[in-house]
Length: 133
Image (cartoon, rainbow, N blue to C red):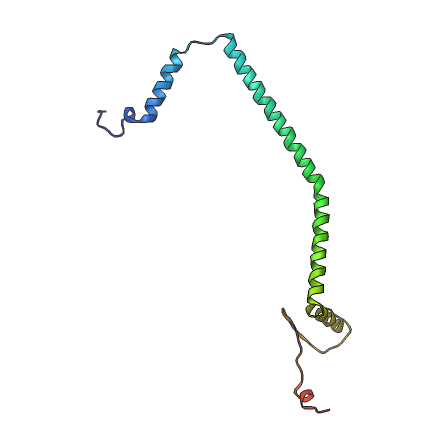
């Protein structure tokens, strides 16, 4: 390969950095027993931190599980309050008609009402509008 080749690894900045790292690693003398001791202490510290993190994670997981019924109960109560407020705001519109519709259907009344999302609409006979008996 020639120096003008664009794929030459010697023109690559990462290749140069790797060569410098290799040269420094060869020049550095072994540190002896203190280097090994530092390595062992570093691994022990890392292991202890992993154990502490795992224990803390499990602790918070158990606290979360213990709080689930309390949070569920509060959310259920809040939802009931919101539904009660909406029922009071609406008054006697859709909720009243829905209940009345179900009662008339269950009571054996064969008169059929059409139900839509906005409310109930009744189909009246033309005879009843003209005043015929």
